[in-house]
Image (cartoon, rainbow, N blue to C red; front, side):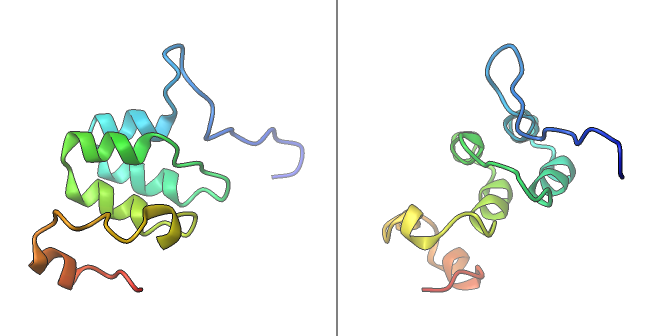
Length: 93
């Protein structure tokens, strides 16, 4: 709204973590989904956090974000995933 200061979804806490990283660390899918819908969200280390936590759904949500390109991921990023998961995922080459 006009006159309001926009919320900075990329601000960091005292430990240098973004809201997205904290949501991923807490495996909060709803908050991750809400944050990924913000126009200026920066994924940063949150993707690595999701991989470290081993939560496939959180990895998938971030990989599918428009700011992440296949070039950023490289060709071998999914080579260790189950072939059925890769086949059912919505990734395009």
